[in-house]
Length: 146
Image (cartoon, rainbow, N blue to C red; front, side, top):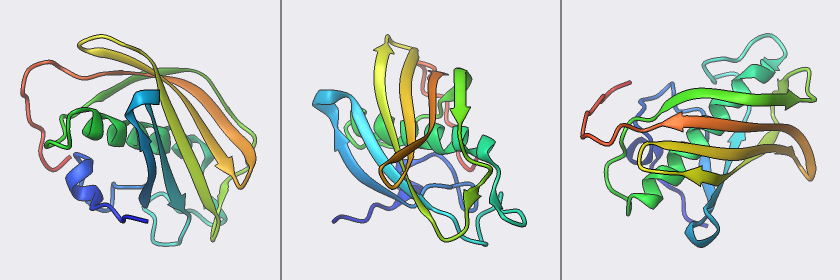
């Protein structure tokens, strides 16, 4: 399995890159799958793990990976999370030592606005779901180092 340099894929620097790897990209199905393993060195790690609201950022970064591949693996543009509908999470926290799978599928897109259906899995069990809306400006504004 190929290990991606996420600093080239996402317009973030460490420690803000929260996902660990890209598992699968399927442009014909408009989807991407990433993984995140919860460790104490994660920026949002608290006493028992990572707050479940951070799952939205896991989803947003997975969407960012999709954007990179959709843009023919060119330098990523910054996208802005506009909001989400009905973020549902069944976890008390993302637990230390566990690896979660994050899937995003584009369900709507025009030049600037996109909408993704996103899921987070703990093994085979779905533990989070949301529709995530984002905006990516058409111009070439570059926000390096965010």
